[in-house]
Amino acid sequence: MTTTNILDHFCALEDPRQSWKVLYPLPEILLVVLCGVLAGADDFVEIERWGRRKLEFLRRLLPFEDGICSHDTLNDVMNALPGELFCECFTNWVSALRDDDPEIIAIDGKTSRRAHARNGRSLHLVSAWASRQRLVLGQQPCDEQENEISAIPMLLERLELTGALVTIDAMGCQHNIASNILAKGADYLLALKGNQKSLHSEVALFFDAAKGLDRHTTTDADHGRIEIRHASVCHAVDWLNADRAAPGEPRFAGLTTIGMVEAEVEKDGETSRSRRFYISSAHLTAVQLLRAARAHWGIENCLHWVMDVVFHDDLMRLRTQNGPANMALIRHTALNIIKQIPDKASIKVRRKTAAWDDEYLFNAITNRV
Image (cartoon, rainbow, N blue to C red):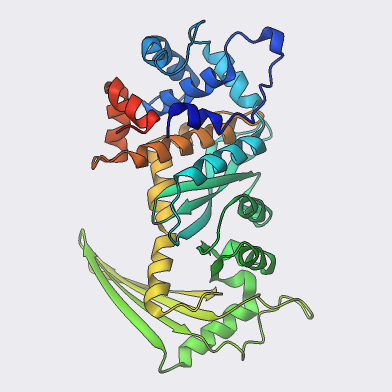
């Protein structure tokens, strides 16, 4: 994929500025912001400073006839860009990166503590993560964590999910979300907790007494920590009566499997135990349940952690309009580009290499490595 193609995926964006006042074209602004973030810049002052010193590099990609605009202009443009349309453009671009093999898609939310509006509400993003390809597939901003329930269906609507297994934590264990996933040609794996109180209680009681189930156990030892996981599944679900929040409310559509994952962790001479319960429309074995449950947590380790530690997401201080969500999307774009580089170095080292080596950055942007 060439740089032109990357920018072409964002051609549906209309420049929010009055045309007669525009000195710096929108594609150039998007490119300098993206390249600056790839090269390690964490705010608009740093992006401007990087761009002015890398103008000859940038002119290999676009004209930049009038040079680099000020950090205030960068800030104003990114704030003004329409957030929903920006998300759709990003999703279309990622679709070109994906292959056709079945995927486990994890959906989870994250709050950027210092990126908030004047009213004090922090930016909360619900993101979709392709566990096998390790790609950010899309994002949907919402005001607070409690609003994930309304944000998840909006995100699902934009994604190509055919053949995928969509995993969501207990916040997304809702009848309509399960139905939406099935309607997109995918299966769901939903964590089950107290928000589905009666169903959770019934499934927990079942696994307390059940025998002869399909089971699978794994053991991991690393850094002085030993973790043993036991997965159990049952496909006989017709007896379930408690999966209704109220009389007459529909059952979870397509429910085929209930499962439990028990974890026993020993560290520093102390042992902790936990149990998690799941419902799924897929006919999962115990091996598949354990693999999918672990893959879901990849969104924490491979996305949320990377955003905080490598891209310093929690240090961003944008507070107005669409800026916080739009810059989160730029960072997701940068992460996807970095993930495509066939380099065994860490994400942090790859990002620094992009800052040091113009050819490395050029090849990453133009997909020529």
